[in-house]
Image 1 (cartoon, rainbow, N blue to C red):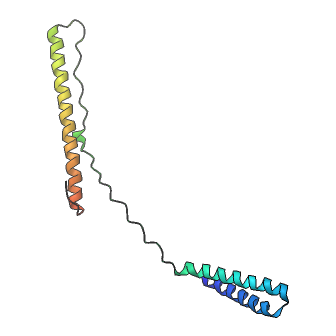
Image 2 (spheres, one colour; image 1 turned 90 degrees about the vertical axis):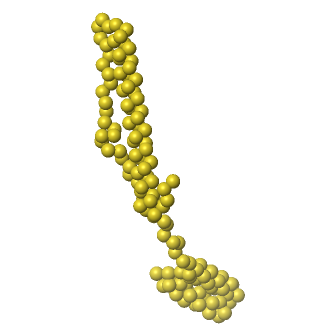
Image 3 (cartoon, one colour; image 1 turned 135 degrees about the horizontal axis):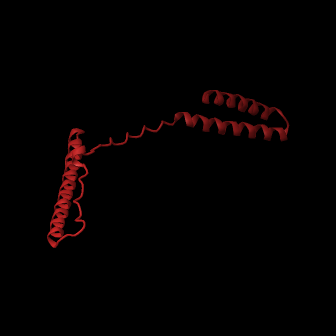
Length: 132
């Protein structure tokens, strides 16, 4: 399509140039202006043909999905609060159970974090990168 437009502009510009030498002074200026304008358009159109297309963008990095297994994120019920008449021993036992329950939760979280870091490292090694 660009070549066809350029050829059409060359034809119009050539006709305008020939007419610019044949008519009277006022029309000579007009025809020469048209010829110059056509020449400018031909240069602009053909310059677009010579440019190289931009290289395709690099593909985005592959996402690494490291979802922990269901056993690693399983919900654990909190200890039952003492109800009714309770002693200090009941409260102490409840506090100890809450502490153990919280400790197990933090350990479980630490295992999930470690598993996720290891998963990313394994994916990096598998894809040719280096594990850090």
